[in-house]
Length: 513
Ligand SMILES: Cc1cc2nc3c(=O)[nH]c(=O)nc-3n(C[C@H](O)[C@H](O)[C@H](O)COP(=O)(O)O)c2cc1C
Image (cartoon, rainbow, N blue to C red; front, side):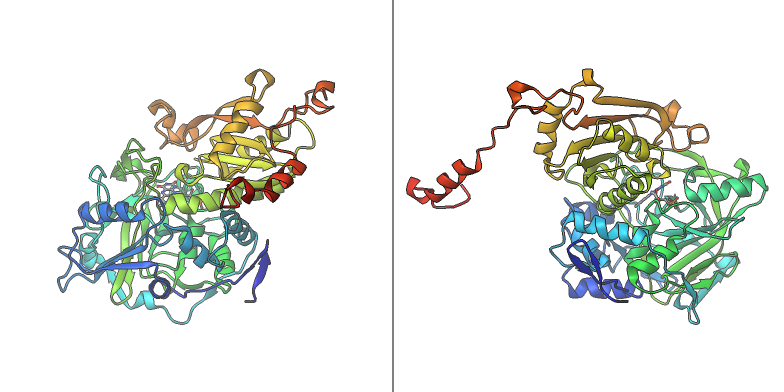
């Protein structure tokens, strides 16, 4: 596929073919750290990942020697993590130059979200090199980390692509939803009715049928990026991945369920999820994206595994969840791009005028959205918030929306804080609450009783808008020179020019002082 001009960049859609191609590209780019020393799957691996991910500035990690997983029966011995825990690798995935800004990444992502490249059926399928069924299925043979000491189990589903199909339209969905190793052949999962696979499950439940599912592990990075993005209902993530990689995804039929999965994956776990609560098994807690463990925990839906297919020398891909200040990870880095890109598309589709930029700071995984706009009339901020909150993309996200004028740098917290201080007045309707909406059952600021996802979809939130734009409802004032707001203290250009010209004369060496 040819380069595409997006904003000021020429973007080159790039296929890495598979996880191994991506790992090779990272090695060449100096973005990979390989660990040959023996590492314990039990909390040691997760702690190394935590330290290395740091503030979103660490390399990806390939663990080659996992304690207790070197025997002949261990067909999977390596664990890869941190694929997209640094913007440098998000730029690589999106085919952007090294100096591309956060906004460049957001614009590129939103371009791809609007494109469709249909998948094709593959003639070859490395993921079918080995096939296990029946008594040969044993999930305990896999080197799955216990990422955090308080995790309720060994979380295998952290950066997988979970594939399900709408039984009415046949459209495939790929999502990242957490799941842990249960018994030898069970994989309990967190399955909420409001997420896309939840929509599929609702239909199977109505028909009293188990839902076919395929959990896919080890893929090139555009899969995880799209699987964890709220791609609109009715659009398959396969089509958007095809656009990012510049060529169709190659799919192959599953062995025991009627689903199509990427032929180049490292491993696929196939099975069925029964809607009957009598089949549920314990799941959770899990070190969640909020940085807390207090999320959804209890008896949950279970994948009953019917087959495992995998490549020779298969590599497990997973990730460390849980974001805190100065502790970023793949979800937070990806979210800051995905959630901003999706929000911009939602605002555009809703026809909200004047939107210039949007931003989701990485530490809150899209819980706070900052919108910058050019005001034409009072009420634009409320129009923007209403559009975002009315969209399906607002499940678990965009609890707080902060709207600022064009002169405020949305990447500078000091600038946002200044606008909050002097352009917000609650008496002027600048702070608006939107109570009783769907929210996030993993957010510890939500009382436990309001986290019932059967009742509230993804939990119950009161959302808030902070309208930090200059109030256009103010009258122009003669004492402000006919403006709504007084003049600011920014020096006049003529005074700046005069001082800049004489800067060295004052004894300053650096022109920037
Ligand atoms: C590492 C990671 C873990 C996630 N875990 C979950 C989860 O357990 N449950 C969930 O509903 N969403 C989870 N998400 C968010 C979903 O992937 C995201 O909402 C996505 O849009 C879901 O796909 P869908 O829109 O096709 O339903 C996770 C995202 C990431 C990056």
